[in-house]
Image 1 (cartoon, helix red, strand yellow):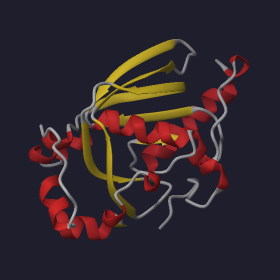
Image 2: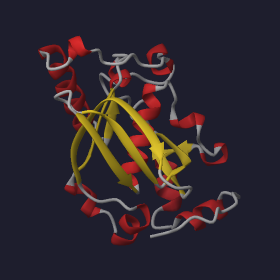
Image 3: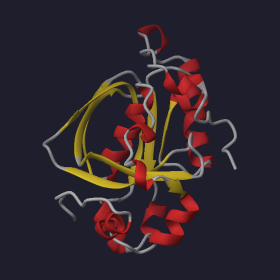
Length: 203
């Protein structure tokens, strides 16, 4: 079932390069309302990130967070994926660069491709720079799952979906992924799918 209020694949807004947030929009009620709507929509859908195009607004804004519900995951899974709680973070007009050459491959889903998932290879560590919700400059170095979320949301601002970057052989429903691969490590999953296992570092 589609998440209400979230644009789904096929909506043209998801394929546009989002426009920068101009100085005239900073510290306005309009921008505050947009961010509030994004955060509420993300949380209602049990997501960890959301970009403005996903609610039909082609602006360079994304929000992300990992709540303490992540602690309910098995410790081995949290360690392998480097997942941990981190606070709500807002980026306006972000730029993103990889730190180092290390990459990891894990399943990703998307609130705009509801019910499906696939393996995606991304940089393990990135630096994100831009403006915070008050329009002040901020730069964060992110590693592990937060870095993956930031790359996923940044892609949305470029009109890119995870299906553009996925390992096609791994594309499946979330239900099949959970049923087939619960408790398995990523190397085992890739072998099961007939994919070569890259020499990635595992936490």
